[in-house]
Image (cartoon, rainbow, N blue to C red; front, side, top):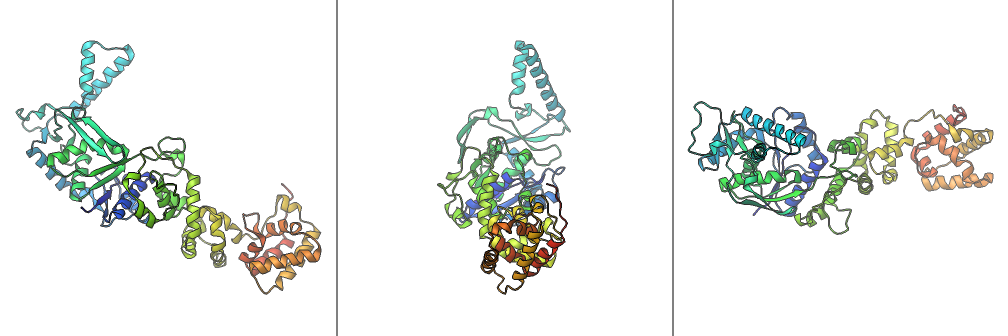
Length: 489
């Protein structure tokens, strides 16, 4: 048997980070078993589905390296096939036409709500009302389940699935375990609406079957849907897939992940927070799956080790500190040209001069290990941008005096004669300069750092000088003599 998995998002919004994890698990299982990973866009909700959302979902998946092995399938294009299966289920006696109107169903819900409010207000109901409420709260059973009851002439009908009257449905889930549910607890769900359009429940089953899906890996918020969908497989005498329902991702407070916890959309992790796709894959893999104590798991090892038995039953908690740690590892390993390109493509990196771009590209091997993501890298590299004229404030400004100016002028003269503009040579030159004046580097280091970086985060002063380059260093030191100085703290 060839393993076939799928990821089936609804294009009613962005690609959620939890959805990305589901896609990753499905992709990994297919890769681990030498199978196929397919993508299906469940766009049957025409009022809420948008092409922009479809494009964003596909873009996010491609960025993560989780594109499908075949072109995405649009569920909306298969409505005729879905209807065909619904009518076949009617022929088999596994479904039926129902003339109960939407108004009648709403009246049932309204009556149940009124009785519940009455019960809350009066503590208990009369025997008659209690019996009625119990009946209303049971799963809906239409009178037209009876094949002998004729439909009203010209009535608008839906097609409903006929749940068995007796027995129970057992699901053997790879994460949730073996769970049974009585058929009497399940609705006769609608398969075709009165206008002939298929419902989500029907479309999912038909598409999974026709795509040859053997393993369904999805969030445990769909677990109840499995009990609703399996009778369709049974009614068509189709092979059922293997199910794995993974717990949803929670925030640090243990509650379901939402906007209040920070970023939830994949494009935010890329465009706003500056994470790398390989780091997101690694982090999401460990967010609900484990392999011993391994934290850094490259793709080749993930494919080699991944299996459904490693999926955790308990919800995982998003931890941005751990994500930063994982991303920092991959930042250090990343190709310098690729990392520079990713940084340069960010909105905040636009409009920089060629000189600045050249400085930052040359500094990439030295600075990328100091940042956990591209946002932090931008801050770490800020001293390399065009900061002139630099305004000195606070403690740095207080250190401005004639002695300091004299020392900077002397240092400038000595650096101008330096032929080897490398970090070791610069470090030696600074040491010789301080020795000649009989002072420690601490006497000139703070002011020198201030006038070269403007107070921006920066590495060792010799590396700062090397990375800024000869011309920029000379210009910033010369500016110092005429720099505007604020004495405020």
